Image (cartoon, rainbow, N blue to C red; front, side, top):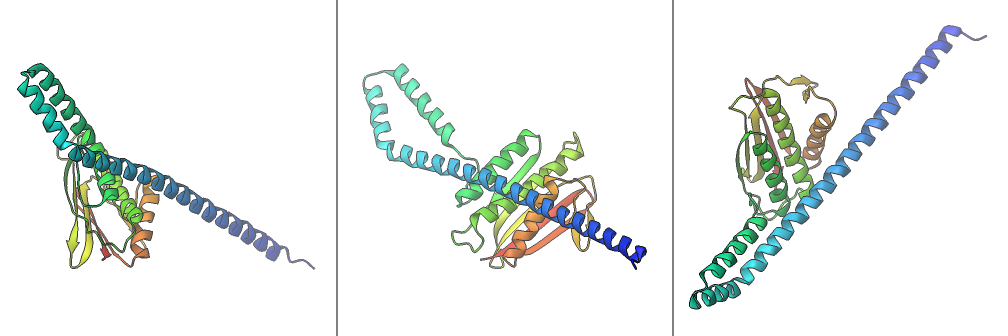
Length: 241
């Protein structure tokens, strides 16, 4: 004889379990898709920076030829031609310049891109960064962490409104024989904690970004500290060298 109460509970449990599994699968798929998208963007940015450095090396290689051309125009009194040539060289240099040089192509790419975007959003940025040549953390993982940290900082600054004191401070260097990353920014909100983790008030990419940072730090047995103080939110990350 069927016990209907038990049957109903079993069906309800099966439905709940199915819904939970579907939710987990969908969430994981979304995170994987976002991760792949970020990795593609980072790869493109790195290639752009490598191309800039190659062009700069080529420009330096041609320095002697440029000087000979300039001297020839001067010797012939061709001031107008010389001016045009110098203007062309200046345009070439402006085209291949990169704003931030850390010693790592990938980090140069992500920092230059993100900082430039933040400045366009009227956010004051102070950035000091040096990256050693030898790292345990993979370059792509390092760039994902830095990129997501700055993205989150920009989102917080944008929520502040039109205040003139919006800022992002970025520091990357060696501290206690580890790679130390610090990003702090203006904020007007308190970020909630749940199970010792910070929970973003905004769902979607922001939340995925926090999880990607957490997962990468855990992957390398690194250190992660988030501090929410009045008006300022700060994140510290450390990776072993």
